[in-house]
Length: 228
Ligand SMILES: [Zn+2]
Image: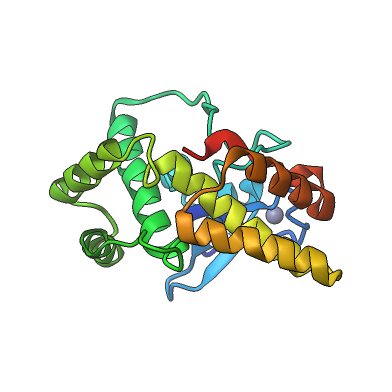
């Protein structure tokens, strides 16, 4: 009898093996799932499907995906521009809206909380409510939706935040692999800018993207035009 997990989100992982089959998660993304105690596990898409109760499998398509700025080599997960082609059942649209909101809240309150002026008390309450109840109230969804649309195409726009998150986490990973002091200084400077401004200018973003690919491999290509 398998112990079923609760799916939490799709997120970046590095040098991580799938909890169940022990295969290296070479796509650098994983489905993060939790057991009853809230402990998190990283699973590949195939094993994730086996860890969820059959009648809840649809949830795997409805969890926040924080890796959308990543250009996947395999098509396990849709990218920032992609559509996963899934059948849209009536209830799916509502869940998709909630997922959209959760992605936004997680980015601002958790993933980018160390950036300048990204976190916001109002969203913190929304996240607390979600962690307690496992879903968002209609009122919270409205609040988040209006925040998303107000910021569309701007620094606090979802696409920009998603891109900033991917860059930040991959820069940190690259810095751990760089040995030349001058290189380290340069890349650290770009990360400081990113955390201060919340974005990078196109020239810099393209350069940084090349660094990431050179140090981590082609599969870490990012959609660097995602900055607003
Ligand atoms: Zn596996």
